[in-house]
Length: 430
Image (cartoon, rainbow, N blue to C red; front, side, top):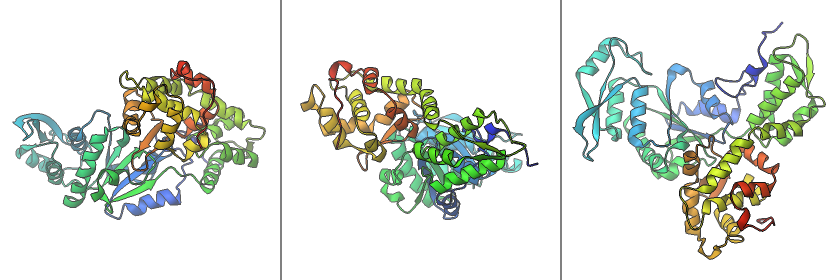
């Protein structure tokens, strides 16, 4: 008999790789090919679409260091985190930078050398410590020199780049050009957004120096391979109707596909590899199960609506609650394609009590800060972002669109504190 595996390990969506991982030619092969091109890589896409799994599947742990971004980091914090992961121990120096900030001192702890570059020889570490390395952590040239001291050659993976403040993202995009020209270090930036050129928008000089990998797309063929991998591991056979229904109703969400497959196995009490082939998914109510899965996220999405509607501070126009009004009111097909800022304004103006004061400029300012507000409200993963390049609001949580299609809009208006301002009619944007 084939090796026995747990059903939960086949469809897992948390730590590690699911056993039924699919190497997508348009994603995995492009990632592998790009590693040889001496460029920085950007892995982007919606939340829970396999961005981190892509990296874990195609890189050995010893080939990279990884750090996860925080929403309050500036460029200096990001550089310090890179140096720590590379193996340095950091203390604050009494010396000051030109801008009046404290410099930092670098060394390796002896006799044991911690961190990602633990292969640095003992004697090499002693030599580095004797140099009393002192640098300005905001200066990319100093950071490059420090990494060169230890012959650093690994990839640097930056997870959750989208959580960084926009100013820090711009500063790092500038620093990335220096890393490209003054070192051989390659970065792999992972973030939740849909457009390919996020970093080059922040710094046009990165054009040709960055390769974008779209991890968002799951084709019908990719899903067929996922079904096949799952069937082989568990000695099961998904019914044809089940596969077709999953493809039709999941809105391209691989997270939801995995959840449905797991639920269908649970319905037959399949917890590990079967001794005999079992057919799975016959008479399985896909629609009800999807609603059940989506309902389990009610508290998170209701919290998102309630917290986002408040905004950063109390303002006269209360634009954040009205942005929610536009999102709730518009046709789902518009959200799937991207909601243009001009259309958002038309929707808001149709109901806003101070419509004449809702200018496009004020709306764009609010939209540009929408991710910051979600991060501040601890909405993880974020639900939507605003692409300033195309001036479109894009939902990056695919489950949210499905969830929204099952909700009573008047109830959502109430969570957004809009009930008093609205009449009970639905606005449709064309």
